[in-house]
Image (cartoon, rainbow, N blue to C red; front, side, top):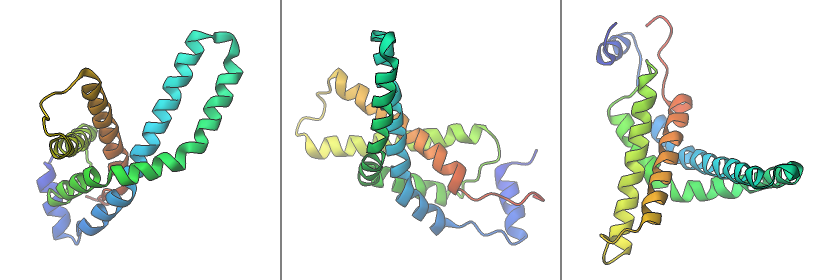
Length: 171
């Protein structure tokens, strides 16, 4: 099988133009919203699971709570857009510079890694700016940072699936 560079070079010879601006714009506008949606969905499922494990007889009350939590999806998506702007920007710029395309399933792992690293980089910069002594990290900060990085990686995979360019079938 040909490498990605060979496939991309062949596609460019036959008129394929990588849409860098489109990738950056879509990641910036919707990357954080996807991350906010993933965050509220995972939180709702986690709370539902904990509630069912504590009291399995009241499952309908918990399902009602889970359904009501879906009303907060637009709020979490808005927070995701605001808080995920910089990581989404970093991810989209890197992917556009590398002209990243998805050919194999292992490319999703690379997207997860890039999304997670951009979130970790952004959080580290925020901590250094906000805290005069950034080397004092407690366990809760570490867990929160890891969870946010996982959400950023999942968001990058979902956005990559929908927003990265696809090559025509004849390539």
